[in-house]
Image 1 (cartoon, rainbow, N blue to C red):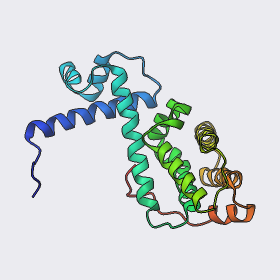
Image 2 (image 1 turned 120 degrees about the vertical axis):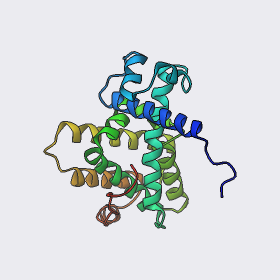
Image 3 (image 1 turned 60 degrees about the horizontal axis):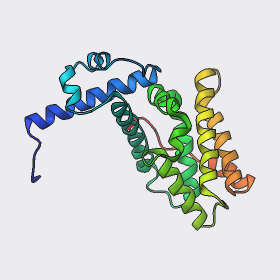
Image 4 (image 1 turned 60 degrees about the vertical axis):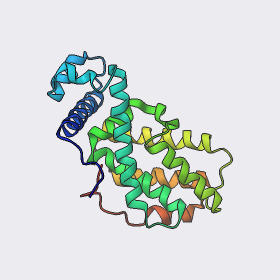
Length: 212
């Protein structure tokens, strides 16, 4: 048994916080961040007083909303790559899955795209995981990267550009477009063309039923 089971008050506070974060994520996805706090609380179906029990400002809420979305997505990627031994494949699979989520989870995708390149050096979510995977591939001799920070900027730019393209061009096949970008990135990071193509042709785990 846990040492401390959440009380009814703690559970209610957790539900309120979650409702506020969900409402903020929806507003970010719609590009509507210049809204009054009252509109956020109405969307979350909570009282104004409840807002200030959790956040001091609207900006603090939006930051928490983005971090929650990034952490959820990053946790899913960690779960789906846990059995992989090749760090180059870990990086490629994470990128390929993220590309497919632009269509499968458009609201989460829009949250990520709204914050753009600001996320490239974030301490939560996708950025530290991508950096970790690139550095692991360098140590394993799979990638030849002189400057991880510059590599991260290139990867982030490619990921965001791909997402915007898939939203603006619904006729494009998300899987083939994502795999082609991933293949190009792997070549840039140091794999041969044949290796990059082989890695990006490997089957991916099913996204259905996983956290996102």
